[in-house]
Image (cartoon, rainbow, N blue to C red):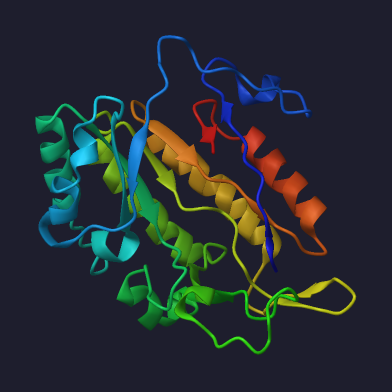
Length: 266
């Protein structure tokens, strides 16, 4: 259940995925695209006041801001999208010579939900989310009181209906903002699910499908790359260490190598 984070930087713009060997040959970023630094802003206050108050954004060493927008805030009702916050942030950042990088957040690491309410209510979405927590991790002190940062919720991307709605959001974002933002990324791929057993294996919840989740990551990557042809499309890949760790890590890598040549792993 505890996560084993692997950071990969793989830029595939200069070569096709099919030409990459199993040992994961790395392509360097073209010299025409210099390294840029973005200030990470993990929440947006009303009217973006915290963004406008951030004096560091005017520092010439930074290219812009990476701002977290939740699925819940961008699609408050089924098929009704509210991108007003993104538009306002682009306008402000453009006014000071900076660029926006979107982090699309559907996972939460606190008790709040980052998915739309309709996902939780309609039976077709099978509950919409799965609870993730570190509470059964062997390294955790069992006498420690439970705190809000020890559990959260992950969208059930392995459920086709959930995945279809998420991908539609990505397409809508691409239609309006591709080429207007520096880049976009999903939240991290790793989730903390299941209960660790004394023998080191993990018992997963009955409504979690590891293979379907791996396939969903690859499918979502495909949609992201297709939707953002002019802005950088990036995915944060990390993996959780379970009895299936090595198999799942290999499977995720194989899925990613089949994805579009424009992808970046982070």
